[in-house]
Each structure stands twice: as structure tokens, then as C-alpha cells.
Length: 596
Image 1 (tube, rainbow, N blue to C red):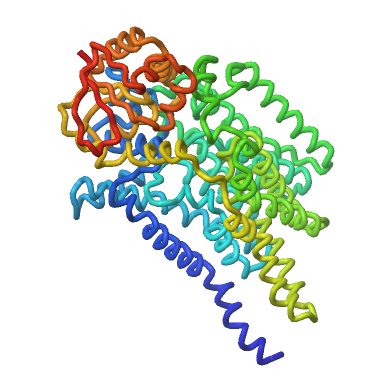
Image 2 (image 1 turned 30 degrees about the vertical axis):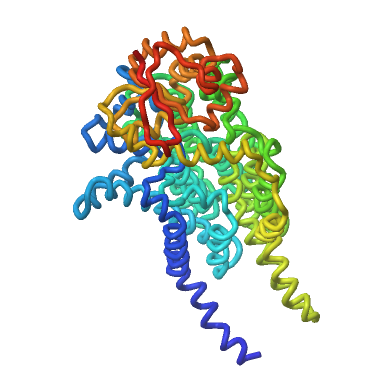
């Protein structure tokens, strides 16, 4: 026994004392694998999403002299430009890496470098926060297991940190788990500051994770109700949240966000967050020793906050996008990531929810085991966050990444409890196979491996054609002939707009962004309506070229929705005297016309 202990102690000491180095090593190895996996995309500047392309165009405009508070994209919907609701906070690391790389390489190579490296930076923050949370709640040696869970099992979340994925979701996810680490911090004041600043930074970027931030804030207040000694945490959280949001608004809110809008940290949400922070700071000043009085004060404060928001900003009680019914029916409700998880293929749904389910079970088991101890007030909000994130998948599939990351503490705890119990078994099979099965089951990895052996739906000829068009039309080789033409405004699909303005010098009409509903509807109605309406719309936008991509997903919507509409007629070979075909290479997946 002593020999075994002497043989194991150096390993345990390394896991406990050098955990940060090990987590950083896991991050470096993961980054290397991701770069290898995405090398083709890096080489061909293949930004995987419309948002990634628009982000690059936004950063490029900043580096070319566009104002810090002017976030309009003037290559879209000219001459007034596209009103973007994003934040410069995410632009900063991309722009910094771009400027650094330009000291050594050309502009195009610098952009590739920035787009490849920038998404991997918040991954280190996420792994650090998850490992720190596991060390604080489970065991000093559990941190490395939590980091491994994140990079091996959280596939939906990991995809947000891949090279070229420069949209803002990766930073929001990193700040989310950093906030959870703040909740788990035994140092009350420090934990409150971390949670407040992480919440403020997430809100400065966007409101997508607001439900999680609200739960953590409410849990922090209720923790003070339960444990009055935790008053410094609540006060520090409230002050940090209020100051962080105010500073973030002053530093990053664009001109277009200086009006009462519901989709960003505008004056509406800024007022609500500053008020919430001030209330959180004020509550512990009561010094009451009766928990019922503390609970009553918290309930009254919460009611006043909600009532005040409802009275002062009733327009923000619905969907934050505030789109018109026409735009919702034509576009928003059809976006894949906005649909509930149960509308997806069953294999995708099971793979997405496997880890969150294990995380919820583990978090509630850990909460039950911690009853009567100080850890109960820590595990309870984490269990609630994990449960909420899983339930939100029934609302929108895009919550999958957050659901997986918030499940890591619970899944790690469940594995940490099960494996030692199995190792103590007198059965050799239980000590070996049982441990492996437990790890595969609680991590969700086993579910993914099993699903990988089940044949999926066989692709049809139509689905293959759609996938081929989606993959080829936005590529550099496909758009190279377009880029050689004199700069002009091109009327094309909504989903092609961001890619077109990013890799060519041309301008486009629309992109998939809710603040610009009129431009989106113009494109939809042009392709859905009569040829006469299409011609009038194209001319009104001063476009001189019309570009389409046959079989691209968006084109199938027009053909299905409007079988006699302009696009359907164009796709079946009908010609119009106001359109003159522009020759492209025979291998091109695109079609181009000059508008007479």
C-alpha cells in the first residue's frame, strides 16, 4: 500500500499543484488539433458562417478608418448602410492580431492569421474557469478532468472556438463559465467581482445569455438570504455589474445603440442592469439577522425591478429582435438554430442533450450531498443553471453550446463519485470495464460513439445538390471571377451578402440581420414576386448585377414557397429582356446577369 501511495503521490501532486500548466497544455494540444483540422479552411479563408464574414468586414472597416462608434456596414444596402447591433469588444482581439501579423506578412495572410487564432483565445479562459470550478467544488485534482471533458465531449461548444469562427459566441461562452467560477469562489468579495464583471462583459457583447446571467445574479442574492455572512459577495457583485455595464456602454455602444433598443445593452438594458446592480449592493446594507426579512427585502427589490422595467420599457417584454410579423414569417422563424431541439434529427438531438442531461443529474446529486454545508449554496445555483440550459434547448437549438459547457461541473462531479466507488469493487470487470462505461456514459461520449455506428438518413440527390451548392458558391475560386469585375452593387441572396462583401470589392443589398428587415424583405419579395416587382426592386437599390447560386439552401425556399415567382421562373430557364447573361467559367456554380 505504501509503495502504491508513493508511486501515485507525484501524479496527484502534479494534478493539484501544476493544474494551470496542465490546463494550458490541454489548450495548446487542442489548438494544434483544431488548426490541423481546419487548415484547409484557413488556407482558403473559408469563414464558416455569415456572421463570421460580417465580423471580418466589420474589423476590416475599423482598420481602414471607420469610426469606433460607427458600426454600420456601408458595403451593405448602400448608401445608408446596414445597422449592425454588434460590439467592438469582440473586434479588438481580431484587429490586434491582424495588426500584429501585418508586421511580418501581407494583409491577406494577416487576416487569415487573425481569423485562425482569435477564436481559440477565449477557449483558454473557458478551460481555466471550468478547471477552477471543479477544483473548488469537487477536489483539487479534478480540474484537469473538467478541462478534458470540455475539449473531448463538448462538441457543440468546441465548434464555437474553432479557427475561422470569429463570431462573438465564443467570448460569451467563456464569460459564462468564468461567471460560474465566480459563483464557486470561496472568497466572497473576489467571487462577486468576477461574476459581476463577467456578466457585464457578456452583456456588452450581446444579450443571448441573459437568462443564465439572471439566474446567477438571483442565486447570489438568495445565497445572502441563506447565509448573511455572504454579504460582501452580493455587494461586490452589484457594484461590479453596475460599473462594468456603465463602462462597457460608454466604451463600446455604437451610435445606433444610443437609442432605446431591446436587442443590445442600449439605454433600456443599461438602466435595468445599473438598477439591478445598485439594488444588489444596497440589500446587504440592511444588516438584518432574520432570514425572512432578508427574503422579503429581496422579493420586494426584485418585484420593483421587474415592474419598473415593464413600465419604462414595455416594448422589450416580447422578442428582443422586434421584427415585423412579415419578417418573422418570411425569415426569422425559418432559421435553423432558432428552432427547438426536438425539431432536429433524433440522432442530433440525442448527441446534443447527452452531456447536459448527465450534467444536470450530477449537479443535483452534488447539491443533495452538500446539504447542510457551505457548498450547498454553491451547487444549488449551478444545478439550476445546468437545468435551465438544458430546458432552453426546447426553445432554441443554439443553446446547445452553453448547455454543454454548464454541464461540465455536474458531469465531472458525477464521474468523480462513480469511478472511486467502482474501483473499490472486488470484481475485476467492475473495476475495469465499469470505470470505462461510467466515464463514457457520464461524459456523453459513449452516446456519441454509439450514434456514430447507427446509419443516418441516406442523402437524396436533392440534398446532395444542396450541400454541394452551399459548399461551392461561397468559396474564393467561385467568387474570383466576380471579384475581377468593376466594383458595383450586386443583388443576390440574403445569405450570400456577407460573403460577397468580405471577399470582393462589391456591395450587396442584405444579410441575415434582424435590424435590417426592410432590405431582407426586399430581397425575399423580389425573388418570390413577379418579374416586374423584381426589376423595380433591383433598380430601386441601384444594383447593376444579379447573382444567384442554383440549389443553394435559400434558393430552395423561394422555389418551394413561390413556384411561379421570379426566382422559380429564372431557375427553370426563362429569360427576361432586362437581364443580360454575364459569362462565367464553365465550372462556376454561380449564375450572373447584368441588369439593363
